Length: 60
Image (cartoon, rainbow, N blue to C red; front, side, top):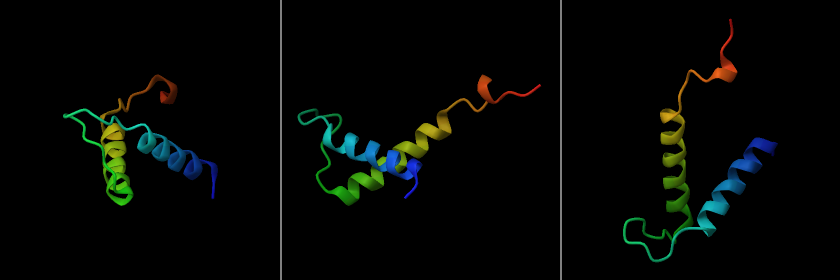
């Protein structure tokens, strides 16, 4: 397993363990498979909303 996968899974585990318990607008997801599914969707949405014209990738 490469480092990227380990960091990705570690981040997902951290998010799962740190879910808010008593908030009506973001209910806790107990089922791990469902959480993993929702986590991947949220990660994809974050990636799509990122600015693709980042200064660090700009070449002249």
